[in-house]
Image 1 (cartoon, rainbow, N blue to C red):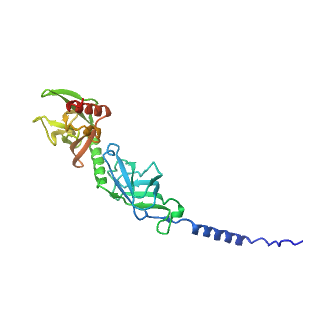
Image 2 (cartoon, helix red, strand yellow):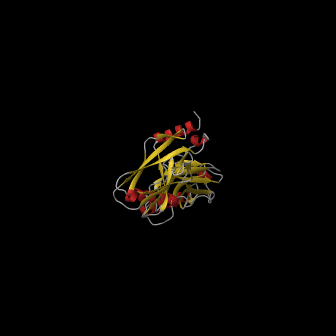
Image 3 (cartoon, rainbow, N blue to C red):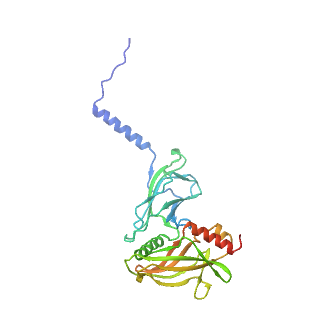
Length: 304
């Protein structure tokens, strides 16, 4: 009876060599990993009207290629806004020809930070499956890039954050939790009170003026007219007790869309002077006052 010949066992070094060769062969067949975005995929950032109140940022990923682009993970970092923040709803697929906005909540600006460029870090898959990969368009990748600041808003957001800090060091400025009403020229007219409460730290804080919103205009008490701005001239830095001031409000327009599509109509713009600079701060009302303002505009405009 024929017997199969048994080969002697391989030496240990030979077994190791074979394993290494096998590993090399497998790795050489693996899909390549890119370190940049595929050509035709771009990233930029901006803050929309819905984002302001939440201190949010949109990271817009545009896919001008012919293959799907899937964001597996994405983060935004900046020397000014720390720590880095992550997009929490990955994975997200951007189909060919589409742009998808990935929303992040920005941390407050670090006003002592040195200047530097923002960065977006993306881990992604490009294409339907591994078989769609080519040498020029790898199926997987990790990219670290400087996004385009679509409307140049990042410096403005940081400046407003730092101005808010400079104001808060001297006083808190808060709107009332309800409107009150007076009668002017036979019409019920809304009044919104604000209170500036000094922190006791002292310092420079002037509330120079205020302007109305797309929803309501502010009457100038000096002439009874609605202007672009109403002078206030309040020196809060010298105050030792709370300072109350009022805005007399009338509808800015009577187009119903002003309420239906409202995004910023209940944020009031003040010009302030601090040790930092002179610029704008925005103070919004609570939900109850927001509803009151909508109802008031509706009554004055005859919608109800």
